[in-house]
Amino acid sequence: MQFKLLAKLRPLGAACVSSGRDSSILYYALVALFVWLSAECIRGNPVVLDEYGHIPAGLSHWLLGRHYLYRENPPLVRLMTSLPVLLSSPALDYSRAFEGQRSEWMVGADFINANKDRYHHLIERARCVSLFLSIATAGLIFWWVREDRGSTVAAVCAAIWLTDPSVLAHSSIATIDVGASAFGCLAAYAFWRYLRVPVRSRAIVAGVCLGLAETAKFSLLVFYPAWLCLMVAHRWVGRSTNRDLGVRPAKPAWWDLILIFTISLFALNLLYGFDETGRRLGSFEFRSTLLSGLDNPGRGYSTTANRLRNSWLATLPVPLPAQYVLGFDSQKRDEEVGFARLENRRIVRVRHWYSPFETLAYKLPLGSLILLSSSLIVLPFTRRGILPGSGVAFVSALFLLAMLATQSGLNWPIRYALPALPLLAVACGGSIRAMLSQRLGKIVIAACVLGNVLSVLAVRPGYLAYANELAGGPSRANRLFLGSNLDWGQDLYRLKAWHDSAPEPLPVHASYYGVLSIDGLRIPTVALPASFLRGREIEPSPPGETAPRDFYWVISSNILSGMPANAVFTSGWQDVVILDRNVLRPERAFARVGQTLFVFRVSAKRESRSGSLSHEELRGCLRPATDFERTRLISP
Image (cartoon, rainbow, N blue to C red; front, side, top):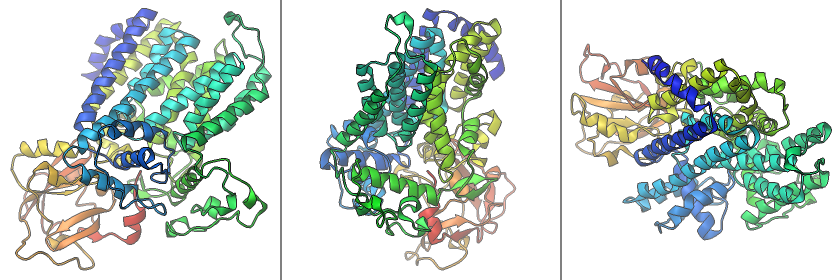
């Protein structure tokens, strides 16, 4: 059915890439569709992991002038997303905010509890900023490519961003990845404009934009070596100015590059309020192996050292805010420890250098993969070469992805690669322009764009769990992914609608990977029988509480894959891990809610119906989670 609809819409798509006016119509139509789908998720999705930590951390930047909460990411995007919340005068509780540990999660939980009646409304306001930044990114792609390649090419390049399910997902939650994509693209665009016409005023603008990018995400530090290489290449090739602009050709000056880097450093310090800028390197306490010299960064968050303390570098002043340096160190420590991910349906903590490329291959729609792949083939043969806008964007994106390839502890989530996506979309400009000169190329481009739109509509509204046909589609994404690539707790609200229409109104026990509790859904709940747990004793049960006979056991995808969960038993609560995953596997589920919640019907007696499991089959299927699993086996 999907291919028949694609065939019917193909003439329309071909028309949309035939002229500038039609291209503008296509662009604005995609923006409208994007806003509508994102708004649906903004209103309908619960608070997800990471999101609830960013908002109170951003509020602390505004109200307290502190930057240690969530310092693992620079504060610019948090400042923006938390501003509408600040204007709503929320209740705040920072009693559990501590500088010596990662306390943003406790502060986030306190923020939810302090605003029980309106926390979702507050989060909606913050999410609107993410949507605005995503639309701004699409506009920047369109503006950049139109200036360099024309409006028709620009509309197709913007469509790569606007029709991506992962972009839709993260444009609907108040985290930093879409904002980092916006400021990274803005910085690259400003630097391209400087290279095109290397005058001092454009160098100053490029420096400011680079500073904004560096206060959005640590990964954008790779722009410094990337731009140095671009400057060398541009001076060597000698294509600095478009003669059509009527400006005297000139090569970019090295002093201008120094000015750009200096201004960016000043802008970064300014946003932090020059918080302990110039502190001596030897005075820091680091936790990562890279900077501390500790052999095992996972042995305790409070363990610190400084491998540079006894060297001549210890006396050097660091021209960066102290919390920026410590945040970089903490982020590096998380990478060294590694986060949980799936490999051959088993949980591992360190994967491969090619993991970001593998994730892109499975998470990008096939239409985007075709357009991006064609750019690698066609770009070297385009008449204008690699140093116009396509080349600047391509080199910047290449450095970003190369940096991710070196971070094997956390390089697989698609959200970490999002800042490279708008740059890759711009880099497609040369190949798309070449394809548009041929009739077959127009048909291929139209099919790619329309295919992406159909993929988005088919997975709506479960964009976080999207996987393309190479991965087997969204329904099989749970075989490949954890965490933000699949299950961040986004399907909880859909459980209420499923239970209201369930064939039997049985009570529910939820083993749920998310922030919120199922208690708020007004669904009858039960505790698990103590016989399901194997291992050490758990806390005593309240008087008079008995084991349930028949109930629905709702288990999220992460937990079915082996992640720990908090379970409430008739004799108490316990952090547990599924021991027998042959019994509790997705294929045996009674129902599926969204893409991430699997429902098992548990009965006192054996039944022949599909998805029904007996108490006897589930006896001893859980074991207590170890201390390591509770504290380190997490997924970003």
